[in-house]
Image (cartoon, rainbow, N blue to C red; front, side, top):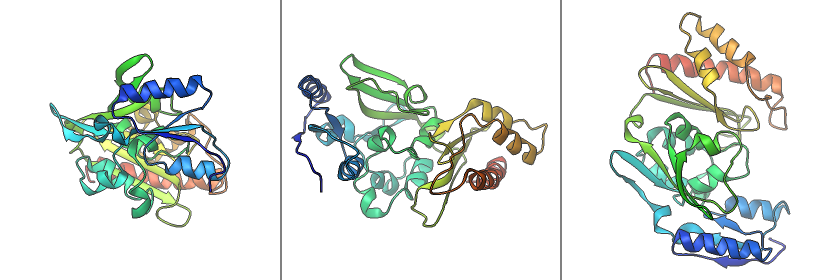
Length: 279
């Protein structure tokens, strides 16, 4: 049960959504954009979130797009994870999000909510980082299209009142060899101890991580280390872990020592598969 009242709005355009946000913010409502609502509901029930207004983005047509346009795949932020799984136009993304939750919950979680949410894992971000995707954002300052790595690699860095509308990915990335591996404590759909997604562009391997640290990320430095073919795979993996840019988590799911052990073995498997060009 949610212990507080709030106002609900369902705008038909993103301009209307931004206007409502600004009005609610000016009135001290601490508004939130809403799509699937799973995270908002969960955190509100645990008394970890309060808002006086939610703005439902599912009524905005641009947020529900899922199509190719000029050799680019356009994914609306209000699409559910199941929509991405059941029509796997981006196979790496589909395979990554299909075990984030069970089927019922995936019918509610949207890709925009997943990417911009407060939960630290945000596993669905990894394929977009690997494919150099771009995002369409709308906010009080207008519309902007920028690389996703500039605002979502690590902690989300959207401007106040800014709404994620679409994610755009070059179609050339969609058929490249990939791996996506998730290691959990118990159940397959649990939070990850280690999640690795990798892509082989034909020239080099790209790789991104979730669950290992308090942020999901892709690191060019780690990729340089892992692509150094003058060294053995074991040495490259050990060097990458030694260079790890953020602390490895030590929490209720796993100690940092065990996480490091799982990371090493999983990274060896992922790299071996990518170097052989297998999915």
